[in-house]
Structures are given as structure tokens and as C-alpha cells.
Amino acid sequence: MNVEMFSSDSPRWPRALAGLAHDVYHLPGFARLFAREEGGEAVAFLAEEGNRRLLLPMIVRPIDEGDDGDDDGDGAGIPGRFDATCPYGYPGPVVTTDESDRGLEDFLDRALECLGAEMLARGIVCAFARLHPLLGLPLAPFRRTGKVVRHGETVSIGLTRGPEGIWQGMNATCRNQVNKAGRMGQVVRVDEAWKALPEFLAIYRETMDRRSASASYYFDEGHLLEMREILGDRATLLVAEIGGELAAGAIFLETNGIVNYHLSGTRAEFVRNHPSRTILHRAAVLSAERGHRVFHLGGGRGGARDSLFDFKASFSPCRHAFHTWRFVADETAYRALVDRWRERSGGDPDGREGFFPAYRRPIEHAVVAAGGALLATG
Image (cartoon, rainbow, N blue to C red; front, side):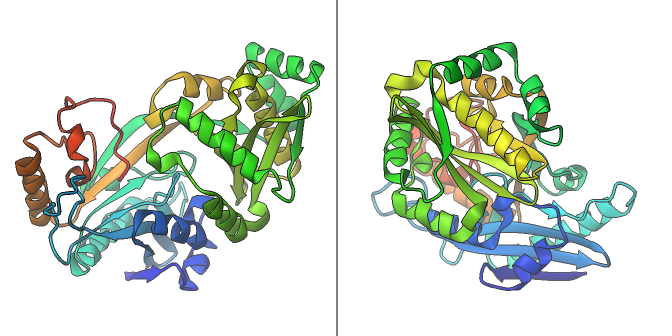
């Protein structure tokens, strides 16, 4: 088996993806952008054997003083140790998919064993990945190697039936609100030059404030402009106007026949006008016209079946299971880090079922009961 781990500037990364079903989250430029947000390095692990292949994007981060969320300068770091998380979105491992390939699981068992050996050689203690809900992946090898956790479902809209199929997939409430918006004169347009980006960003931040979103959901203008530069025409900004005012906006990312609902926001005074519905409907129709196969809306907050999930579910009956994978390559180092976290906090990090890796859980969350609402994000 040929095994490699290379950085995001290596030509091996796009060449390896060329033979795999993948999404925008697997692109090297996308991983590199979010690696800077995490203070790490974007790398990909590649295992190949015959016509079988596995590729896993990762962000490798140093385990430093203060990784436990404390800022008094004597945190839970172990010098020379790293861990790996994944870029934003659903960039979990992608593999050659052939339902007739009965040897694929055996290949994955060997590939993941090689991943563990490569991580140990590089001082990488553990890895976290959000698995892609739309891309087929045998879960048994990942369960044998680490832990697979199901977090709920995501929603997608099938695009191959065109505008009529999209419309029929929406529930009655959704269709009524889109029709009403049209009668009231809402205008949805593609902002080709992204001229409305500063105003959209202000609306987006206002929306995140209303939802009490975590810091990881806030992005600055430079980040979004760089993402657009990396993705080019694979990133689209749609805006909705009511009475000449920008009421809402959303960014959509597309590649390899898959479109993703990336960021969106609605100005508070226009929430009752449902401009986000008209934007999503327009985005679905536009994506179908561009020849894409599926529009992935994602799920609720932390995978929960909440109001955000219900909003997305009103557009389509298509559902997909969402899982994360947690893999500890160096059990001794991992336990040492968790034990040091426990000594400092006096609490239980609930590492395997909640926050992962447990030693990165902020100490102020230590009093939250095990099994709470926290979703591991790596």
C-alpha cells in the first residue's frame, strides 16, 4: 500500500481528488484557508492500493499551553505533540466507491491502520472528522478503528428533476411563503461582483448575534474575499431586496455537481417577510440550470432537530445521516492530556461522547453535565 501525507500546496492533492467523488470542502485551497483560522497546517493523508484510494483532509495543530481554554499560562500542553481536526463543513474521508467492490472494507481497515502509524510517526495524538452526509462511505472500518458518532440528519434538494421537481418537493407552507414574497415584490438576484458583501456581512453578523452563535461562525470580509478568490465562480452570493433595501443574503459553494448552503443572514426587520426562503428557492433553480445534481442545505445546529432543521426540511423530503469520526492514535498521550485537563478543571471532560478532543474543551464548560448539548467540533 502506498501511503503519503502532503501539504495543501502539493500537486498530489488535486490529482488525487480527480479520481474521487468529492465536495468543495475537500479542495486544498479551502482547507488552507481554514487552517489559518485554526492555527494549524492543512495536510491530506492519501492511501492507495491498486484502483482503491482514500483521501482525508486534515488541519494539524500544535498542542500548546492554554489549549484547555485557560489563559493563566500553565495549560495542558505536551511539547512536540499535535492533533488533527478537519476544515469547515463536511470534509471527511473520501474513497473510491464501487458497490461491487467486496474488498473495499478490507482496504479501508489497512488504510486506517497506516493512518494511525503515520500519525504516531508525526506526533499527532488524535484526529477528528465530520463525515460527508452525501458521499457514500462504509462506516464499519471507521468504527473498528475509532468511534463514529451520529448527530442527526441533514437535508438536500434533488436538482435533476428541474424547477418543477424542486417546487413539488417544497411543503405547502414553504410554497405559500415564496409565492407571497413574489406578489409583494421581493427581488432576488445574483451579485456577480460581490458589491453587496460588506452589507451582507453586517446582516450575517446581526443574524449570528440573534442566534447566540459561537465565535467559530463569525468571519471577516478578508476571509470571504479570499474564499472567493480561491473558489472563483464556484462561490455565489445571492441577495434579496425589499423596497430597494437589502433584506437578506446567502453564499453558496459548488463543485463536482454538489451545491452547499454556506452562510446566510436576514435583517431583523425583514424576518417576517421570509426573504431567506426566496433566496433558497432561487438558488436551487439556478443550481439546476447550471447542471448540478444536488443542493445540500445541511442540518440543525449541532446536528439537532431544531427550528433551523425544520426550516431546511420544508424545502425537501430528502434526508441524510450526519456522523463524526474520532480517532486516537496515541492512547497514552491522549490520556495524559485528558488527565491533566481533569486535574486543572476538577470536572469531567466527557471526551468520547461530547467534546473531542476532550483536553481542548474550555474549562468553563466543565460543569456542564455529561450528555449535554455540546457537539464535538474538533
